[in-house]
Length: 294
Length: 336
Image (cartoon, rainbow over all chains, first blue to last red; front, side, top):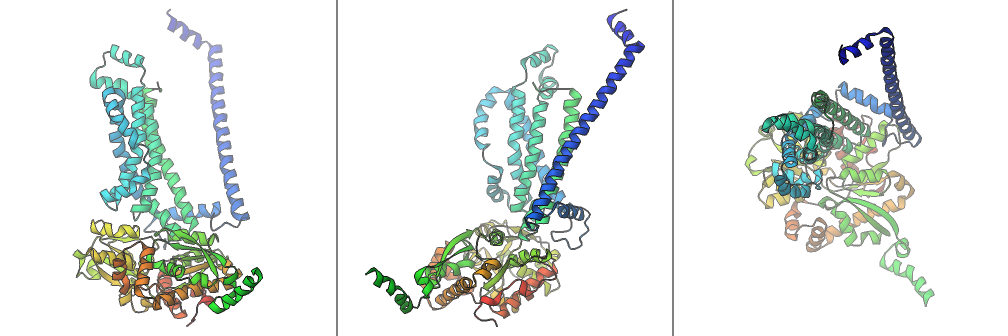
């Protein structure tokens, strides 16, 4: 009987099997308790903030500057169910959300397509890094919003300008994360890859890319948030629809409820896209390949 | 000697026609205005001709960038400033929210320009096209802000033709007044709706033509009466300082009188300084611009009939609103 067969036989003994089941149940219960505790604490935090918001709004008579949470919630529901036939801001909220989403994704995807391969190349090719990094680091501190006047000048008033501003904002976090990931791969991992005969394209796809994925995912996560922040700023200045335009228009109408509704919708859509896009990529890479940061 | 000097002060004030108060201590007021912006130049005329000082007022200036009209109203709502020059539709928007909430109205229009001064400029390539032809075209039209006075004027004009902006294939894009001309020249815009100065600049650069001009009656005859420059105040402040408010309104009317009397060259210089434009541009703008104020009940009614009803029709303001919720005519010289 070899070692594996001996362990299997021991585990199959009734007492050991029962203890193992008890342990698994204990772990499941503990995890459930942890999840419940996290949920209760998170929900309590949210409720406390909502309560403070409600009290401030009522006690200070700020309904017009800081509408009550319930009023805002009702407005969010009314906006999402398109229940107001005389809605001021266009056909419905979905038109604005979809336009903003398309612009944000156009900027985000085009930046990812260029920044990630470039970042990987910069991380692995020293000569390239030494030539390009000083220039890239010099441009990096320019805030995304500072690109808006130039973007309007180059691309005109319209979608292209907004997409470019998103691109300029999200490009750098994507590039720097990919570059850092590729540069910091453990030499042991690289040597192991080479020992197993990985070369060229195979070496890149089987060794470099999986080892860099946690960094790329972090870059994607940071950039997606940046894309939503910048889309709002861009649309406020160079668009006639989208969630940024909605915010601007409601400000000029002095409708704080609509302003807060738009802000909540940006938060929800931003969170959902992050979960959907980055979460999916994460599942298909990090969890599948079981890679950990170096 | 000292005593004689103090006693002489009222006498000097009386002789020079100044009110007692101004000779002793001027009342301090905080005034916001769009700057640089030609529509608020009456404020600068009042400063330069000494109209505020003459009415016993010392003014602290709170400039608001053009295109940020709402920012001035927000300051007025918080009582950070007492008066504000440059907004009118926004007063109705803000008051409507308070009316809907059952709260006392916070602000009101107390004076207004003599002319609407609304212009719609299109690029030269569109010359000769009718409104019907134009509305089928994909045009980009620039506006200084989403609640632009000129857009509301245009919407009001469309109502008379049973049209709305939704019947047009146009895009209305917000863009600062100073950027409108470069955008028109570089074909990023097909036209814009703005004031006399931007229009003059576009015409001088041969970048476009005057498609509509409110002074000619293109927006309708009644629209000529609509006060273009709105002067508004915080109602709480005005209630507590009605005398100061009266003198502030009077100072603006005195400045208007100075404009009427004053040599054109002097007024051109003042307007040039305020708008940061060359005197030649101001001279070219002169025939299509009038900075004077002189609100009347008839002008307030015209404002309500044209702008107020257009805002009501779009649901921008409460259906309960009336002209009295926007204007406070207690401080105007002529009520009718």
